[in-house]
Image 1 (spheres, one colour):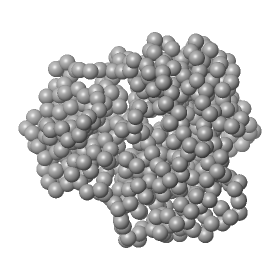
Image 2 (cartoon, one colour):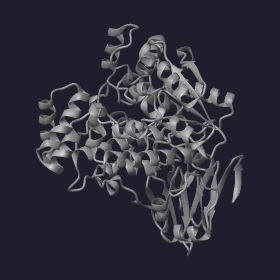
Image 3 (tube, one colour):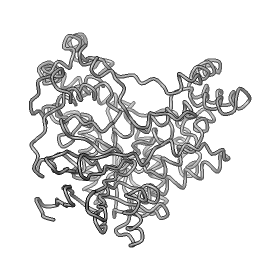
Image 4 (spheres, one colour):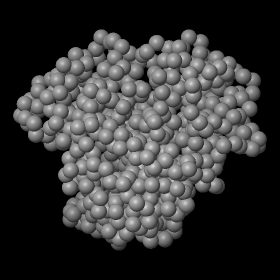
Length: 566
């Protein structure tokens, strides 16, 4: 083992070289576990393991980690004969693992800077993969947007030995879809315990954390969980000038409920740099422009209060089954037939969506048909050229989207929501000045939520109802019963209006246009027709900018989307 840079080392087993950085690290007999590791029985991160557990991990080639532990880890496990190495990435673990075949060895690292420092040439952009990323931005596969660089998916095992590596799926959400029919109280208690376990365990690794509190259901639940766990924490809320992005009233209510002061910070559009990307060290354009200001404020505030990590309610909608669909009613229909319970579920969803019960039932009947149960996968092809749209039209081969024969349409859509949460996790840079953690995306909580029938999340005309009930005593009624949700739309509109001329220049004269990926006429027409007023699809145009700035940071050549297979 030799040091190549402060805070970074290379560990070598056989023909595999792994670049790792940061802590914690738990040593194994022939390997290591990098990142946060939590025992399912105890809400606390671990710094060591007993020998019998290390043996079980090696003998199971990492499967024991999936079944008995959880967290943000990547494990590297050498075989007894030294001929192979298994690399296991935690389900919903925020520590990434990128790998590349390099001569007779395989290099692995948690970000691209380390792979380059370990000896590979800076990889060029895979333009066909970029087109696919623009069409399917929230669906992650093992393909990255850099040539020759693969990503180990969450819950998968990569085995490296003689010849090429082999990847296996160790964890699937479908294995936890049990639809236990307990009482509402039992379900809420299960979610309460799992949520508290995940929040308390992740916070236990730090002396103090900073929570980004919006006042919505999810971040408020994290505040309640931090308060109940006894961990030290502080609160910050981010505000926009427009009232739709100003949730201070809700944030203040929650801060008062947990007895903590609330720091309020205004997002300043003048601090946004349209030529900068926070994804420069990532092999995908996984960051958004408006996040520059959110990260700046959070990191500055964390440092000022002595916090070592930043928590958020990210992924709460996904975990707590925040669907906008009649699929939960279809699930009730398919499991119990047409009857009182199905119409009860339809009435609850009707109250939430503001549509007639008849409309909900018609939609549920349609979704219950065998050919409609998977759910439509629709790419966003807006502003893409005809060639790019054709190239990117194929649905990504995500392992979670293979629905079992008896898989229900609502469960399929819940699992799609969970897959979208992967894009949030993959946007976390392990070299950021401060760890960013979404404790609601913990494996035990995900599994607990999957076990609950989808229609139970929509009772009483509200979504995420099981979670609302679970924390009804800790949340102020105005938050527990809240139906509205704050957005960053007004801030993205400010960005567009302030940087209008520069944004147009970046897209019209950029790499995406030169590679034939963009429909330049459509983009020019959008900028010309709106003047300096943000158009309705501002988010999509800014997403194109995000990808363009990332590509400029990584550009290493390439002959265009028709000449590279990505």
